[in-house]
Image 1 (cartoon, rainbow, N blue to C red):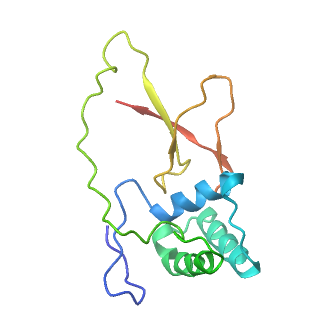
Image 2 (cartoon, rainbow, N blue to C red; image 1 turned 45 degrees about the horizontal axis):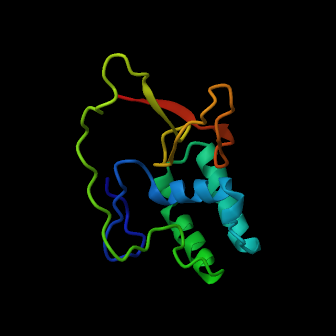
Length: 149
């Protein structure tokens, strides 16, 4: 998927799993040990992003705001920003193959993913089926269960 360049020399391409910077923002908002430690402007940018996403704006339309947030994170000492600055290219995803443990007689495999399918955040489900699912702080919803086939 190709989006506007927003002044950059090359268009930003989103990975097949969804908006990478949204996934990183969601992960950081959920993990208290990964506090964003931003000033007022950075927190307003986070609020702008989450408010727009909750009203249905596609994450790709917010790339300029993500760029501004990334600059704030870098200025606050987060050397990786939202993970869009890489020294090596992301390897292509492998083709889907049948999992060896997914045959007859084995329980189905599941992961937890973005409740709206906008980002590539994926987590293992809690070991206890009755335990609540981790949440998405961007949409204020629990992660959804996705079966692996």
